[in-house]
Image 1 (tube, rainbow, N blue to C red):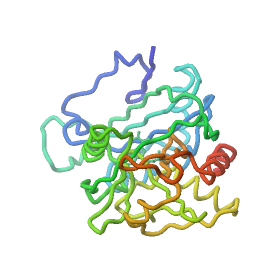
Image 2 (image 1 turned 45 degrees about the horizontal axis):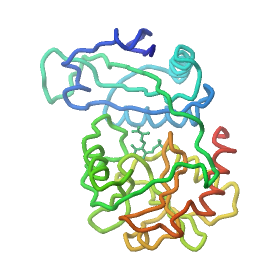
Image 3 (image 1 turned 90 degrees about the vertical axis):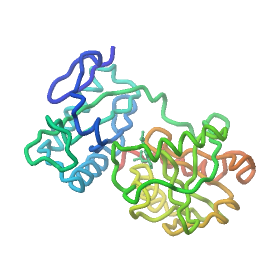
Length: 285
Ligand code: PDD
């Protein structure tokens, strides 16, 4: 049985209910986080909560929950759901208002919801065992505030669906200038001639926590040159390696793009080292 958190209380999922007039439901007016936890140990907890605070501030949602209180909610959800390898989903919407109105109401209590879900073992850094991904390229048609981890994910899920319809697992998105932004549910890294590159942070991409951790780990290690810079479609199409990063996937190799192989068509040697480093150091930050 899944135990969830809703507005200060823990309860079985079946008993959790919110008003259909909640602005999260009507407008997607909210922020969320997904924190990966292996054997009940969260990865990047403080970084996830800082991004949550940044998102709430952007939306002007006032919530007094402290870092210690969030930690308690995460610990309780892990405890109540078997302490295994779980993703903890945390969601704050602006709250419920009695009358539907576009304007932000001044007096409103945010809705806070959390649940835990199975994410399986920590991803492997063994090329023979890791799950590999097939991707396709598409024009990024989402909004211009992708740095906000909004619960309004329609643009992302439409792109994701587009990818599935083309027989792929993910979609690499490109802006009007044919520069890489990110994927429908992940950030993207590229390797060319031993140099690792990823798009820089701006309103076009989510500041992924896995991206942040991977950059910090790679730079501290120092064996690879690492760049945050614009990346063109042509560069992506001729990359030696492409990776997806996200909380549940960690660093995941893309082995096919638009139906053709990426590099050798196998997880690459730089990926293997990057995921090995990530596994070893993901709790350091
Ligand atoms: N997705 N970009 C987008 C659009 C995302 O939705 C995600 C995460 C990422 C990677 O962020 P992070 O490393 O912080 O997980 C990048 C989550 C996991 C989801 O929506 O389920």
